[in-house]
Length: 173
Image: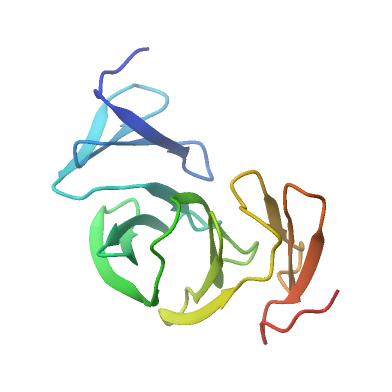
């Protein structure tokens, strides 16, 4: 099947592969059932730079910026009900948002930008701060949580790999 949403800039599948979510640069988000292609929701007026599902599929997170601050919106899924909006404590003026992902257990969120990696406690909605210290832009970086979610790993374009403790944010290696 084929669907139309002009200006699509992000797509994500729900973890159970039942839904496809697409966001565009015109402040629209659409969701379709994979099997039938039926449209199940359309939200307007929300610019979504990034989309991510919690691993259990019960929450969808959309990310944007407001005057340099990262804004995260949490949606109960599949009900598509707005739950919460969080703004980061930190102003991130440089670069653009690159990647958003949950820890394997769904307790933490990490947002990779051009020069920072920001962390949130996704269970209580707390901005945990950010890490820096890379030698250059992170626009070609790779990152991941360990399978148990205890550590976070990131490597930059010049080849430096760092590991942080997910709970404390302290640099481990």
